[in-house]
Length: 397
Ligand SMILES: Cc1cc2nc3c(=O)[nH]c(=O)nc-3n(C[C@H](O)[C@H](O)[C@H](O)COP(=O)(O)OP(=O)(O)OC[C@H]3O[C@@H](n4cnc5c(N)ncnc54)[C@H](O)[C@@H]3O)c2cc1C
Image (cartoon, rainbow, N blue to C red):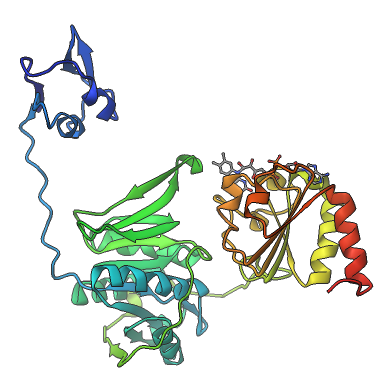
């Protein structure tokens, strides 16, 4: 056994039981007793610090010296020479993190003929841009990109590395983290610097979105996280003396192991709700497909897109792409019109960044009204047709 109880000191206060996540300790005859479920995690020892009634022969894990790890890096995802918006959003967040740590922000740009993107990266807060251009990096291939980022990380030793939780980022980030021997927190919704230890606190929904977990990576470096598009805000800025670092690495086709035979781009009708300026969103109160046809008419008049709550996806009325919220998309339109939506936290988690929120609900106590700039109490089937009528005949502006 690696954990034991000093019986004379234990008064059966149960603090250790509360602290143990594994039911590894119980009270027997008024004092604590270690069970076979104990994993020696040490949580009980921490909880019993004042009484010192629990001892262990486990060596405390040493935190390596990471004082040479400097800088907050953002992977500048690009496809066909076009930057993914999430990378500018991450640069916005990276500026806050870097300020709190006294570090600099850098962007990592990989590709072929992508130098036209450097200025945009500087203009969004990247003091340094690490540029790697190579014919073999023209199209994204996991192993090629992993090899390059591994080399950059080992050479320049960043403290933090952020990537977008896009299809590409979700493929690349775990590979890179494994290669450089660190952890990765995927799909974070908040990032912050702990003022005491200067660690990055990485917060994300856990257990199906029922709790928010905050994770810190103490024992490995760099601290790596991915963040979904739309969660953070871009923050354009003017920098003095931004620097470009051209990094050379010799890539060989035979090391990459995958070949791109053909690229097929899926064409979706309309705009992705993440990029739409106007969103007309519906919930259970819209009452089925006919109700959504009415919302679509309103969205078309306003040049916007349709979105919805999770219940609507579960009813099969709209595809998952249209779901807003904790397990859907995070959006920041100029106008968000919430029709027959109660305003559950799991939904509002994805739309509070909207500039103006208009809510239509027949329940004056619906929580959505607490967030709305304008609230209309009434039946969505009366109010939306009136909107459509007014807008169609130019009666409203
Ligand atoms: C782990 C987890 C993750 C989740 N993730 C998400 C997520 O990402 N996105 C999401 O949306 N949900 C999510 N949910 C579900 C969420 O908790 C709510 O159940 C859901 O958002 C409610 O959808 P709703 O507003 O359409 O329905 P309801 O809560 O049933 O609200 C319907 C509203 O319509 C109003 N109404 C009814 N009839 C009319 C009418 N004729 N005119 C006007 N108003 C009317 C009612 O007053 C009511 O306020 C998640 C839940 C869990 C447990």
